[in-house]
Image 1 (cartoon, rainbow, N blue to C red):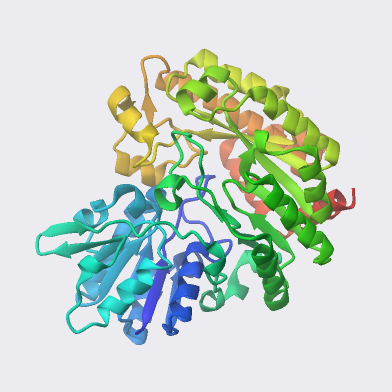
Image 2: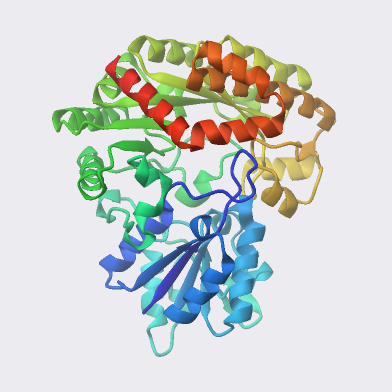
Length: 487
């Protein structure tokens, strides 16, 4: 069986319409590894973030003649993924097509009702996708037997029961990047790759959609398995810089410490960062010291609001803001660079409480602060609350495609926090983010000069691209990273 996976173009956080894929899609990489392990070795990938030409996709389909096409979908670029799906089915009506990814997990049968896809798959797919492939090979397939599958039965869409989350993550093969042509990606040039050491998040933040795909139960790979993948990537591709993209890396602090110990004991000589954000109340001095010793150069902490009532009552994060201050101070003491993440626009928020966030963020001794525009994703508690209690400024399908979490405008408003007020706070928040980030990357004096020169948003985006995406930015970043590790 020939299988073609497609990763559609995505919209970047900075508003770039179609960005270059920085690294191979890790979810598809896991799925490809599962396919090969099960004997389905004839697999290709078309990453539109690299190819940038739909005609190449259609040419590949014509020449490769796949038996099945799989398209991964995210809510924030759903309209484009829909165009890809429908475009393929229009040109190749007999070709079977299955959609997967976070958007399917969030909206379930919606994608079959609104696109020409034949099938869709929710949740984790390493097990259920292989069962689907085996069923396809049967003389008379019975799709009702494939958990996680959503399929067409005449004019109806049938959603099968859940497969259940994979408990033994060590049983999953390491991501397979061969089909991507890994050497084409910017991350490969920088000797950098993402890695995921755990799945699932037990916390109750109302805006987060990770539970829809990975569930609430924390499931972790063993420290030995994690370090074995790092070694494998270093041996195969000379990767020595990792982005740990877990939602809860430090939830089990003893496991996190063991990972650090194994990295140090094996003398891997790597660097790693946790930009995805970890909870400030999950770290302690011993863990941070071990992280520093094993090569950690950056940690991002999730805070979301600088108002305690908003954090606990309205977001459901249940995080003491004093813990954020303590975590930042302790991380600085250990010598690891860090940032703190905030979001503007939560339920219950007013102009006053949003300004509490900016004041709290400005008071932290962190290296920089991230500010985001709250984007409600389908399937979350936040999305349901906003649908019932606020006014959307644009159709859901439009803001999912056109408004990123660093964009204007706010996509909804409430009586307590109007669009005009939200925009005002967001502008202040983005200014704080841009100033602190530039000072972090370029040094405080030069960063401040560049910040004032780049107050024009177009110039800022151009400068950000040159500094962070270009060769000069990469050299500066590597220099700062080595200096951070040496300290």
